[in-house]
Structures are given as C-alpha cells and as structure tokens.
Image (cartoon, rainbow, N blue to C red; front, side, top):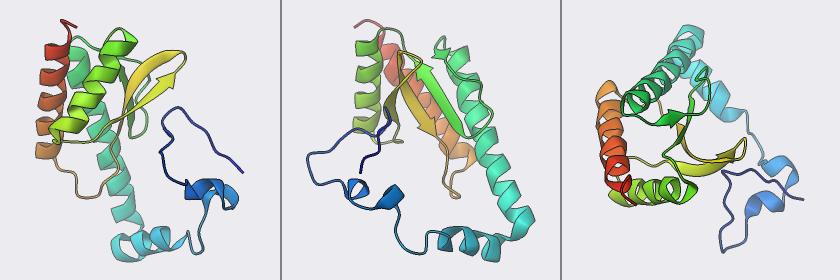
Length: 145
C-alpha cells in the first residue's frame, strides 16, 4: 500500500500510513462527531469560515510582500513561491527553524511552493499576523540567495 503527495515527504522511519488501508485507523469519524457535538453545526461552520478567512489573509499579505501565491485561495490552503526552487526550500527550512509557525513544502503544477494550511481551532488573528510577519521577514532575507 502506498500514498504519495508532494507535501508528504518521506521520513527515515517506518511510515504507518503505508501499512493500513487508506492510512486509516478505527473510529476516524470520532473527531468529526466531537466537533459537531461540542460546537454544533453553526459553530463548526464558523470554524471553517474562520480558517478560510485566515488563509485569505495569508495570501493577501504574501502578495503585498511581493511573493507569488500560486493557488486560488478558496479553502484553508495557500501555496506560495518565493522565486527559484532553492530559495523557496530555504524559506521553508528557515520558517520551520524559526518556530513561529510550521509550513511544509510541496510541488504544485511543477512549481516548488510553501504550503500554508490553516487548520487549528486555536488560531487567532494575532497568530496569523505574527506568522505572516515572520514568513515575510525570512523570505525577504532569502531574496539575496
């Protein structure tokens, strides 16, 4: 069994998702049930809308910073290129090292990109702005590479 995607970079250890059907575990629906039970339908809708709004804010800020947002931001995902593939990979490495937020790498339509996925219920406006400033600062430092 195997699952591949540009953003699923292989590790050096045994990957459990390659040894179970559909990378699943029992009771996968528990998280959805718990979210609906605790937040209700309107609360879950608000959570989804908020993470999508945050993704749009990331895209807006990155475009304003002069960077290339590759995707139409219609869900909670943003794909951004910082120029040459090696520069984008270096930005990703430094952002992860910085620790303000965590963004992974991917390849989309042949372009190396940083993948920003806003998915935590705990994310706030302040978190987004702080993370956006860190990404732009680091990417600006890497422009000279």
